View 1 (cartoon, rainbow, N blue to C red):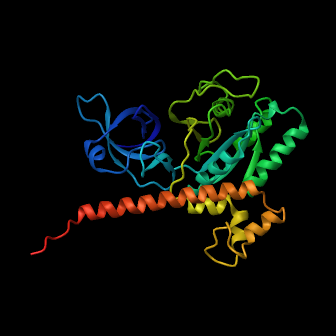
View 2 (view 1 turned 180 degrees about the vertical axis):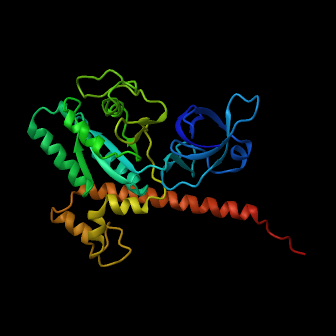
View 3 (view 1 turned 30 degrees about the horizontal axis):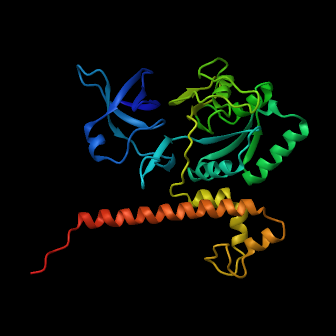
Length: 322
């Protein structure tokens, strides 16, 4: 039987099958030992139900139309898929404690998935004044480079409704952001009841304890589904060239005017990107962030290529002379 993984908790996927039942599953031995693909939230899978077995068996993970991928934090060179087959990525960043460098990284990963991206500026009710809120939204909008930015406040139902409108029935969105930005609270507001646990919020910075421990697909009444992602600390890039081009489209456009096509924007003559920084048209911090993320991506690609060469050599032993 075929179903969709709606929750991933402690390594055992919960699969919703065609008749609406939810079946706790484990992976088939062949998948565990030989395949590079493990089921994650959003995956469409083929499941068997052996007689006398207390869990379903995932026999096959069907090809994904989209995936949210980061470098596996437990491996030197390996990808980790956090969610699959979604339509949108909601990137949540809090008004208080706004971290632009993290937002840039999140946008690279979100755009790399190929999904439509929306930035949610959460906890707007903590703004000390309307001017502070306006300045924060302007900053986030400049970083977002044309990606839509929505201001969200738990005390403003219209702001929550605006998020719901971006998720029509039949679509799935993943909700990305560090712990304490209000993801679970937003899901509860969208659902209309408390379906996700939330931690107590400190008055000083509006942050709460990390409470979401599994990636669960939550249906939103009158809308689609949202996957509330646990607040992931590590978001190392993985194969993120397209995401870099989209998230840093301002630098990408300037780079087209550089004298050398392979300009690294460091000390080369005729660098249009450096010229924009010197002219005050591009913040130096943004260029530094771009270079740091680009170098991280290039280094990971180099490691991956080297790992593939080593793997290939092991699979093709040299012939002995004579």
